[in-house]
Amino acid sequence: MERSSDKCPRCGKSSLVLDGTGSEYYCAECGLVIKEKITDTGPEWRSFSGDEKGDRRRVGVPTSIAIHDMGLATVIGGQNKDASGRLLSGSMKSTVERMRTWDRRSQVHESADRNLRQAFSELGRYADKLTVSEAVTEKAAYFYRKALERNLVRGRSITTIMAASLYAACRDCQVPRTLKDVAAVSNVKKKDLARSYRLLHREMDFQMPVADAARCVSGIASRANVSERTQRRAREILFRAKETGITAGKDPMGLAASALYVACTLEGDMKTQKDVAEAAKVTEVTIRNRYKGLREALGI
Image (cartoon, rainbow, N blue to C red; front, side):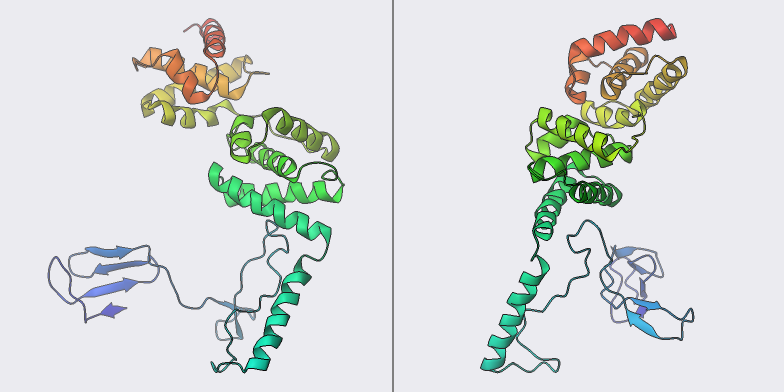
């Protein structure tokens, strides 16, 4: 879509084009991008008949199990206007206000709904602080709903069970987040969080994949300011160590930190054990022990 009224600041020609597919506003002559990542404010349409010329209905908010009502509740708007845009009368305003009040009450009239509303409100904050994906958030909501169905939340803290569900979702999706990370953002003691996670694992009987230490390398390297070449060397060391079987039963974060320290010594990246230990949030003793084991097993 061309907009001839505007001119390009570089070439001065009136040939600016709005690309709806790439969400960019650029000049067709010199290629200068004026604006990018433009939000499309137009309506979204979905054809239910399989034909573009068929019946098209407005798409609503997608359903999500991370919302207490899965996004299917009704919402009465706050504007005191009718469908034509005219202001409501005084008597009708009070009637609509009562409708809004009962609509809000009807959404959380059961204890389970109030429980889910509080839990998922906290889940949103935790997921934002940990910067996890929407898939992890949905998985955590699934674990919490299952725990609520089996009465595992009764008599226990909602915050602790929600944090344990989020940690379980990170483990299940193989996202490198430790107990310390989840405990820090949820303001829950690590001991209580670990106990709640073991409860979920025992009662719900879900199988967690084995944590891969190579996934933890990038996070540690970013905090320790280690080069990309050293990171690749650390992953190679971990791959060789996994083939020999010496990684079984080891803490993935400590193992990744030790492999990164070995790679730093081999690549000449001047990092001390203290630097790597602080970036990985493990002790220097752990790095020394794993460091000796890796060098002896791999002959480095």
